[in-house]
Length: 239
Image 1 (cartoon, rainbow, N blue to C red):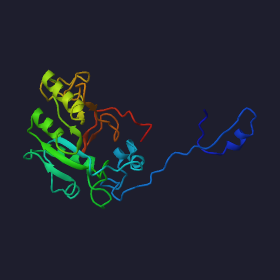
Image 2 (cartoon, rainbow, N blue to C red):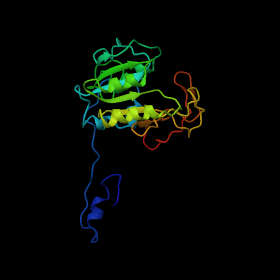
Image 3 (cartoon, rainbow, N blue to C red):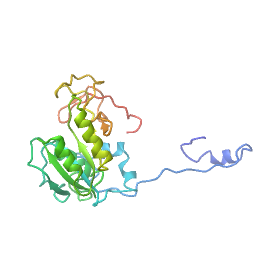
Image 4 (tube, rainbow, N blue to C red):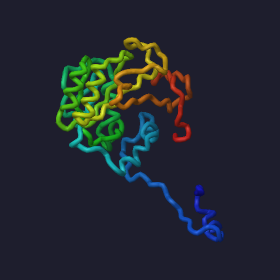
C-alpha cells in the first residue's frame, strides 16, 4: 500500500511493470455545514472538527425518536438553542451551568444562526438535575425512547449495589450510559487526584468512561475565559 498526497505521480506508477493496478482513493467530503459552525470569535468549532462531526452528519444528524438522558447540574430550559429540544425535566433544577453546556453540545438546535452547532441536533433530551439518586437514574433509563444517558458526575467510592444497577440499565433496559472519567479529580468523596484512581460510575463494567481532551492550548495554559489547560494534547496530528 502506497499513500500519495496527490495524483502527480500516478501515471509514473501505472507505467511500472510491477504495478498491476492503481487508483486515487478520495476522502469523503462533508455534505452539511450548519451556519452556526463557529465559536464566538468566528473560528470553526474545533471540538467538532476533532471528532469529525461534519463527516458523521453525512450518516446521521440524530433522530427525534431517540431520546438522550442527561444527568447534570442546572439546565436553562428556556435557552434559545435548547427550547425546542427538551422533552421533559424529571425533577427540580439544580445550580451551576454545566448541564446547559452538555445539553447544548449534545443536541442544541443547529443551523439556526444562533449559538453553536451540536453533534446530534435532531435528538431530543430528557433531563435529570442534581440532587438525584441511583434509583432516579434507573427510572431515567426506563423513560420511553431513552437509549443513552450522559452522567457528568462521580466519586471514587465503589458500590456493588450501584454496579449491579448499571448492569441492569445496560443488560435489561438496553440503555448505554456514558460517564465522566473524572480527570484526576480531588474534590469528590475519596478521590485523591491520582490519575490512576478509579472514578465511579465511569469505572463500572457496564458504563463507558470518557475523559477530557486538552486540544485548544498547550499544557499549562491559563486562559482568562476557559481556565487552566491541565491535560496534554494527544490530538495534535488531527487538529
